[in-house]
Amino acid sequence: MRQVVLDTETTGLEPKLGHRIIEIGCVELIDRRHTSRHFHQYIRPDREIDEGALQVHGIMRDFLSDKPPFIDVVEDLMAFLEGAELIIHNAPFDVGFINYELSLIPSPVRPLEARFTIIDTLALARELHPGQKNSLDALCKRYQVDSAQRELHGALLDAQILADVYLAMTGGQATLDLSSKPPETNHVALRRTLSTSQRKLRVVRADEKESAAHERMLERLDRESGGSVWRLHQRS
Image (cartoon, rainbow, N blue to C red; front, side, top):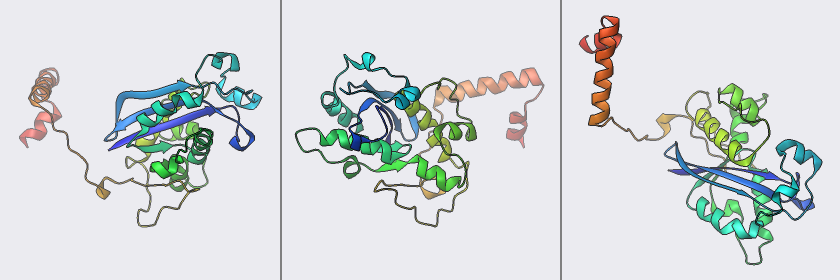
């Protein structure tokens, strides 16, 4: 199972007012494990950045002056996303901006939700924790995900943090009634996979080298402790 966690930074809050994407960050998960693959790109918006947005991400227009426009990076972005399930926090926001950018491309490009399954982690968090704060910072505290580097928002850093939050949220730490249907969220698909009993997980067993290293560790614990609980358990 291939998933891509995606985040954007923008010049403002509303694409209908002509605001644009200035940064895209994506990280790859394969079978719920981080890989070393990611996509990260700053983008020249060819417009001013709202002061409110600047206070959030701190990305100056001068810094973006030599960066490519969206149309020059869209092919690489779509190639990275191809075949993946997308994980986005407050998905309608990022999806709306990406769809707006796609609409500006001369050749017709299908909107994001028509090409991918999208999991909205904000909608998922609201179901898990109704009536509570469910911002990314709040979820980091709730699930003890390290966000110490997050002084300002950044698309790649936020995607990396969101990947850890998503794995924690869907790893069984929270209770959710799986018998009810997940609600639709602004035409963005929401899928809940919170219990390992709902699907078959791949079991990765230790190879010969790992088993030998484990045995050496048990022998060391035996020597240093006068009989480790692991050995006692094996003998019982």
